Length: 103
Ligand SMILES: [Zn+2]
Image 1 (cartoon, rainbow, N blue to C red):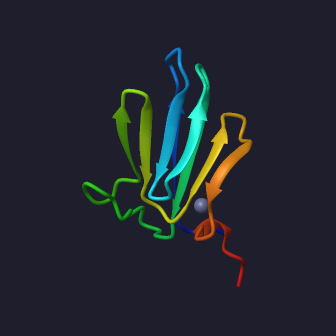
Image 2: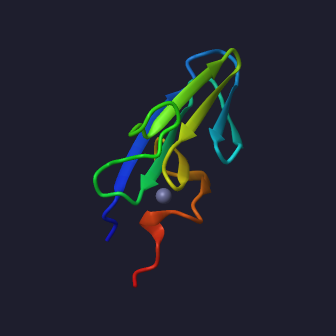
C-alpha cells in the first residue's frame, strides 16, 4: 500500500484555441482542446507531504503560463496525465513510488 503523498492538479482550457500543456521536467507535451480538462497527478515517496520543489520547498506543482501554453512542473517522482473520467493519456511513471512492486 502506498504510504507517500499524492497531489492532483486540474487544468482546463477555457479558451477557444488548443492549449499546449508541457509537463516538466519530463518535457512531455500534450494538447488540450477548448473546454477540455486534464488531470495531472504526481506522487512523492515522503509520508510527510514534502516535495523537492522548484521555487521553494514543499510545493507539489508550479504552473508557468505563456500565451498559448502552460508548463506544469510536477515535483514528485512521476506524473500521470488523464482526462476527468480517469482515462490515462500519458505518464512518466518508471520512478512512481505508488506503483513500486510490493516487496
Ligand atoms: Zn506516480
